[in-house]
Length: 248
Image (cartoon, helix red, strand yellow):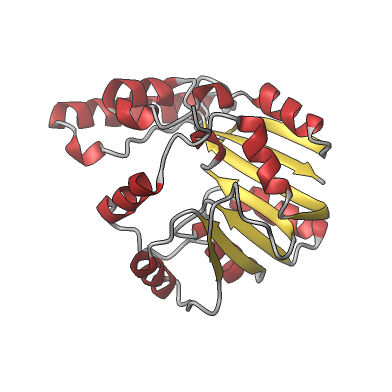
């Protein structure tokens, strides 16, 4: 079995089918507090977003934090990229773009911050895909990885209503203790791995669901939000994400 759970055709179809991609990335974009903390503490100047097309985090870091940023992905849809940059008052000159295979590409430079958000769970060999990040990272630089948590309520939603999307994810990778262990084995320091965020659920194919299903999911979402407001804990069952932070 190959390491990838998806291929270029999958991503081409995925991005061409998506609507509403060209929006202005907000200053409070997901993980903004964590990223700002990393950048302030480490005086970060350069960053690369791996597997991040259409580059929302590269845009966020450039637009709000003034970093020199690069987007690297296996597939880059040029028309979509231009539309997203336009929506953020940026041009192709503001964000460097590399289209390449992470398993073959040899970095020509290294970066203060290497991040990926929703990448590593699409591969069978989790330790190996984390190791690929490190070839882009400067000594002393920061690794920042996030992935969805499909081991709780959100995972049940995926299995129940979008099994084809669920199957594109390596569920066994969604384990903070396992991820922290891999990072330490790879020689990383100051390793943190934890569940992140209050309750949330989503579906890539929400528009295809029946009215009854949409109503049920909205009720489930509201119930979860109330529970985590009363008991604001981040946990395996309710948190939508897992975060990894480490230094090289």
